[in-house]
Image (cartoon, rainbow, N blue to C red; front, side, top):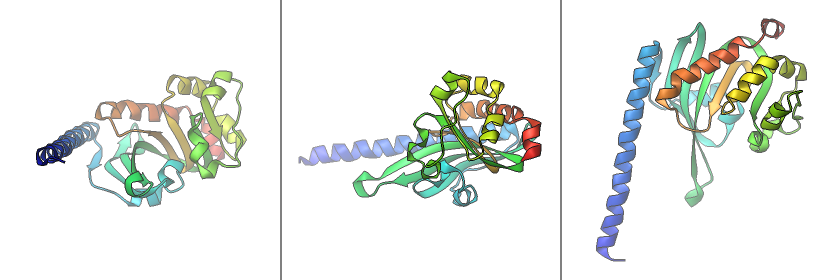
Length: 218
C-alpha cells in the first residue's frame, strides 16, 4: 500500500473523529440549554448506577458496558422525571456493536405490575417476555401494530383503554415499559435536544391517561 494512501486514510479517520467530537459537544451543549430552560438538573458524564437501579427495565438490561449519560432530572408538570442517553455493547472483537437509546422516565406514586407496549417485533430478543402471551384488543389496528405483554392482563386492559390506544396509534414511535414505581418511554436513537420537551409532554400525557383507580388498586 502506498505511503500517501495510508496517510490519506489516517487523515480521513482523524477528520471523522474530530467532526464526531464537535457534533457530540454541540449536542451536549444544546441538551444543557434545554435542561436550564426547563429547570432540570444536568449531568453529562457516564452514570453506571442507572443500569443497576433500573435493571428491571428490559431495554436497560441488554448487553454489556451499560451506562447512562447526558442525564437530566428534576420535576416536570409535577412529576419526578429522568431523561438520559443510554449505551450498551454487544458482540466482541471486530463484531462489537455499540447501541444507543434514550429514555424518558417518570416516577409513579405506587408500585405497578410489569407491562410492556412496543411495536411488533420488539419482544423477539427479550428473554423476560418468553412465556407471555401477546394480549389482543378490540382495536385490530392496535393489536396489529403493537405487542402488549403483562402477567396481569387486567392491568394491561385497564391501561390500554380507548383513549390510550388512540394516543399510542398516533405516537407509534414510543416503546412503553411500566414496572414497580416506574413509567418509561424509550426510543432507539440518541436524544434529540429539539424533541426533549416534546417527549416529556408525551410522557406526561401517558401518565395523565392512567386511570386513578388503577393507581389506587396497585
